[in-house]
Length: 301
Image: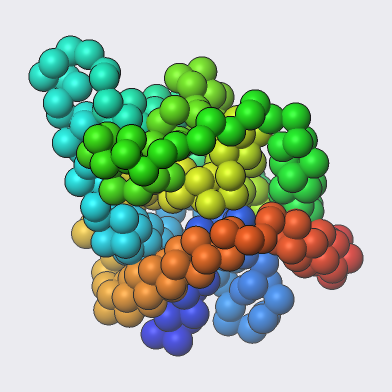
């Protein structure tokens, strides 16, 4: 049975590592394996077809998405308004409308691939050694992103008057809308499906995708957060029947405790990363992935 302490620790871990480019799924496999004892049961639960732990994760996903919605509520208000007005007018004229459709286009392939393969990939790869291998590969992806971004298309500057006229909440939103093409959004949507593998970070993949299209680090992390919100929220809502059904019996108190921890962790992780990427890069996270993944491969190989 999942204890309240375990629920809070896993909740904080989920909230932070879902947004940090270091893979929440990989850490939810590796940390219990490193701690040992009763924590090992958590790792085993993730590779099973059905378990109360998978129902527990529902609350954590919803809480993480809610934290992003609260933090970027002005952005989402503009995006939703842009989506609705574009449907009503049957055209896309404004940055908020374009950004809304970029998010839709990037979300569809990730959602469809997740529905088709999430269960089988989790069952197959939610094991410590495999997670360590993919975490190391995640470090390779982050490093390549920083190296290859030098060949990215030139960044088109955005003036303040354009931001006000665009009706969006932040200059970064306008930059994303003008810098990322429909094709780019589709490719990033497919690429972020790699996060179904424990150790590969969804936020890392989307940040690298943004950097390769000429976004700054600040804009790329904003794009990553916006893309993550519907995917994480949908993953939680899709699994709600598990939580309200028999699998949720006996753990709903732990779900509440873990969800509160995940909300707090995600909220402050997002704020920290926004400040971090004003002046820094993905390289420190890549180094962490190499070290943590390499040591874990030795430990669990």
